[in-house]
Length: 307
Image 1 (cartoon, rainbow, N blue to C red):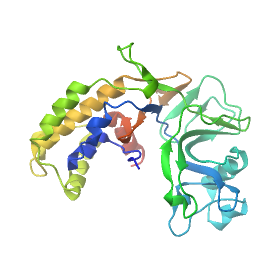
Image 2: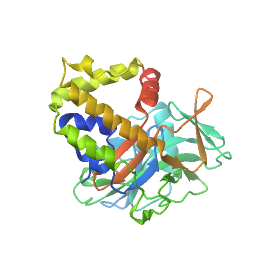
Image 3: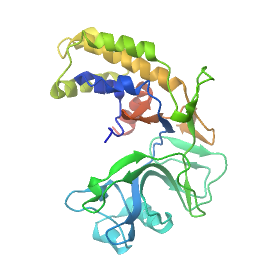
Image 4: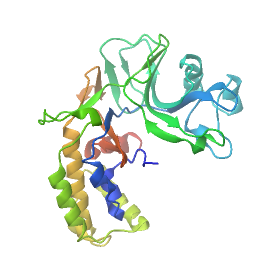
């Protein structure tokens, strides 16, 4: 099963995982990342044929919280805003046989919704009861446990909106000067030369253990939180400085990829009344599913929004 939703491909490099380098040039599927909350899982439980909704707690090992009746909300101890969200999702999500996952964006009736840090502005007010951004379908054997299924990125347009539930999934694509590219195999980024250089550079790097990588990521996040430049020489007490140089190179490659990502202008993103680029994109292919996020911008925003 491919890796799913790795937050930062440059961080995977720290321990010597070079899959992100091949991931960057292989054709795949691009989608817009939505900053919704909470995550919602819904579908039909094949064990009893009943429809359910829930949060990621449906994957709990001991007590999976699948809401199949309204009274289950009290049974599992939901209250307040989360109770209301799940209540509305149970009422208005379409009854599907497959198991889907998405982010709750808000209720209908408005042109703007703010599910988390960012505000999303639509072309027209959404008149459906609920607004959800679907992104994943869970496939596999449900006979044993929901936890045995594999999450697969959703194809654009696979889910159709209803009068009660508006699905937000703007089409995303790579804007490239290579117009002759036949994208039947998927979208593709043209950074092979930089990938080759990064692979050569990796041969000279002493990679970190998982424990060491955790400390390095903590130091990198501190730089982002404090809006300081990442300087390799300041990491000599933690690791080989060439490892940080490789991290910076992969980070730069990620930003080059991000700069070429586009999406349909049916949704605009705002932060504190200013229009901003989308938080990022998600790119999936045979090497895994990784997020393309402007870390220096949106991770900084999230750090301070939740501090």
